[in-house]
Image (cartoon, rainbow, N blue to C red; front, side, top):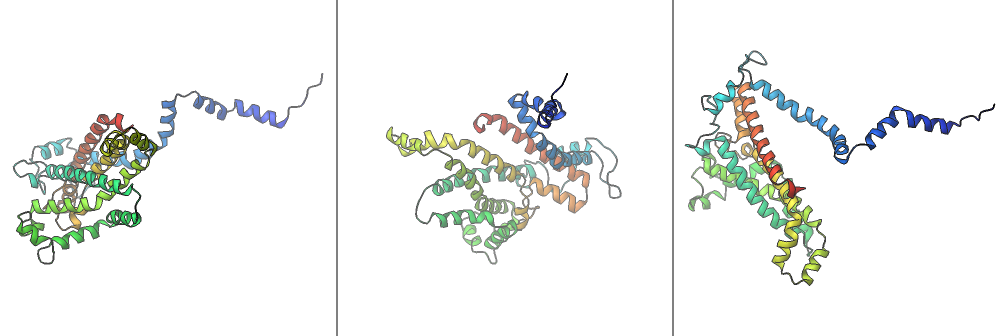
Length: 326
């Protein structure tokens, strides 16, 4: 009995069907859509575990030990650092939370800065995005003028506002002092310094909000506006019924990103010469505790508390607005 020889192509096809690669492909094909999505996100989670979670875990581990100048980690004290910080027993550069002196309290200053800047940046950025979304003569120059502040480095930005509000050389200090808005030495006064830092951040970061919102505006189908016009809708009705619902996910994402950035503010405070002692944000409290007193474990505890506050806010935000963002 004679048998026909198997062709190389047929043999290789049989090997592909029965080999480990074929089994892997069959397993992937049998996954549901959510399981396949998690499979694709696996490498991202793996990278994040090294880039974000591992440093956070190391910070938490350090915070569970006493401060030591001779060894990397001192004696294990558990949650004692957190208890002493949250109860006010641990003396920091500035208090973590103190309602008697709210502008000297790191949490109060950070939340006040975050709320005011994010609200104004969203409103101003929304207006700028609406302008940039229109076609008019000279739109390129207007875009450059709006986006230019975002390109300015933080150090230069801080020096600009320092020179503007310095009483000896600044042109903006005296008029605002006469109106009673700023103190005589604004960069040494907590309320005045916080106001200057807020204005500086709004000036720079409104362009960031405008870019994100503009991306949402340009994704809106223009035919919808034509349909609304034919239906007799006014400009306000077209904005409320067409524009706003369609760009709401972009606005919510922009607000989330900006809120996280605002809660971590540090460079602008230092660059504007307001100083962490005058505007004590949470990030300032971490850095000053580390550099001024060399209390590594205490600084780690404050850093972890800051991360927990930001994480809780982000979790609440995502759960609250998950449907709108998706």
